[in-house]
Amino acid sequence: MSTQKRFLSLLISIILTIPLFANTALGAFSDVPETHENYTAITYLEDKGVIEGYEDGTYRPENPVNRAEAVKIIVAPLYEIFEEPAENPFPDVTVDLWYAKYVKKAKDLEVVSGDGQTGNFVGERTVNLVEFLKILLRSYNVNLSAYENPTEVVYYDVQDLTEWFIPYLYYAGATNLINADSLNNIYPGKELTRGEVAQITYRLMINMEGGEVQLYLSMTEAEIIKILQALGNNDTAKAESAAANALNYANYALEISPEEPVVQAAQKITVAFDHLVKGKIAGVNGQYSEAESHASEAWGLAEEAKNIDSSVNSLSDNVKEIANDMADDARANM
Image (cartoon, rainbow, N blue to C red; front, top):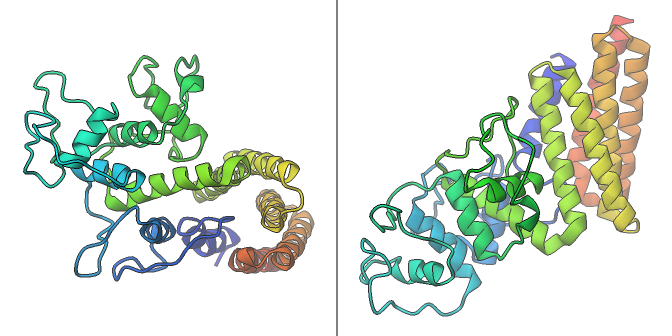
């Protein structure tokens, strides 16, 4: 197996299914195995009481989420008391509906509003990305003032900066609640699944609970994912850029909390990724001795990270395995 394919097969399953540098609680749904891309988010939120499964023990992460369900998922954990509404919150939300009290709370908080033409809430319609971000960020009282009047287009498929959802979308992108694809599309109208809703909510909670350090670690994670996507598309230039960004974010986290083991380990792992990318580029250019050297550096840094904090053990072992394969490929070609 080539180094690139090895890189992807070993790491995508890890990076897209678990947070790199955060401790999470464990939980279980019968249809959400550890290999599921939203496993950590779902189990973390279940442990916090933010989400619930079905009576048969499943979570059904691929199921779509409608607007009523989205409101309950977001609002229910934030308040202890929900009064049954005395009158219909919206023309199509009658007081006897199971979600009426959650929608009323959201309406009172100005988190949701009715359709501009009918005034209806349309709770059965699948929630899309920007609708969910608005409900989520307003519910958590996130300050969006820095994102209200952007002058630069960030996403290829969002060219109109006057769209109502720009502050929510730009904040979510800047703090890595969401990530663009390899073509820099963000798909604002994308309908969300239960797994995707859990992932976005989880990232917001981790950022808010962990503060600035966790935010930088989350941003580091997002850049490492971009590295994988770029290498999967044979785009070494984007991989190199993402590696540089990841290292910057990891270094920022280290500046803030230089004595915290998980931050130290995260920075070591990030430098290891930078060497893997440089090793890949060297190999593509036929510089096999240099590729072997970068592989050796990556292996050593991964071992150091593992010795600093055990939470990165699995990731460290896989980086070391990739480094070994890279070195073997380089020696075979020399």
